[in-house]
Length: 213
Ligand code: ADP
Ligand code: AMP
Image (cartoon, rainbow, N blue to C red; front, top):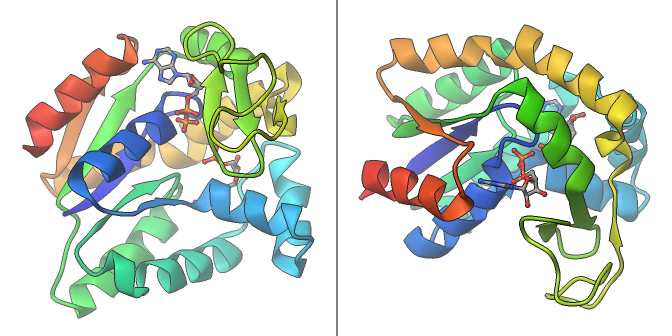
């Protein structure tokens, strides 16, 4: 099963993608996580990506497409995957579509997690991330057991630089301009499913599994 998560930054794509990955036994592939791991390890790709990420801008397609295609070509993606944060532009979607078509394959579901902008700004301010293992928390909705410490690996939790209020608005503008057109793109391919992302995350997941089961 090949699934794409669509939605604004902070809509809950990563939260739902992790639950999907666990329930259906497929890898969770997040381009944001791949970039953050590269930044942490000080790679050239990471340094280049950081320039854009810190401003709330998209990393150029030339860099992003290659890392994604390399990742989904790995053995563990053979039976499917859930993509979180890719594609984010029509050219990215076209490249993915072409690569899959060459393999006689296609995306099965594009799940749009729908959350209005007003809710997003609150969610992003409360998000806390573990840059070590990629786990995500929310100070009100998903608090860690010990404040500021990752339950999974014990490392410190941080407010991502790009979750600061001044950057969140840029990211929302970028989303509306460059990523939202993908809703129409996947709707035309008849694989689009929309869920109400303002519900409690368990209810969002129930709506997601009702689609996938
Ligand atoms: P995205 O991957 O779309 O950027 P995340 O999955 O990281 O978004 O979620 C953004 C923030 O909102 C996180 O702090 C997460 O814990 C919280 N969150 C996710 N889903 C919900 C929900 N249904 N209700 C409330 N908070 C949520
Ligand atoms: P995310 O973790 O998905 O919220 O992504 C964090 C940031 O990484 C984004 O704001 C972009 O700067 C960058 N990024 C992640 N995925 C992509 C992508 N598919 N295309 C371009 N930039 C991306």
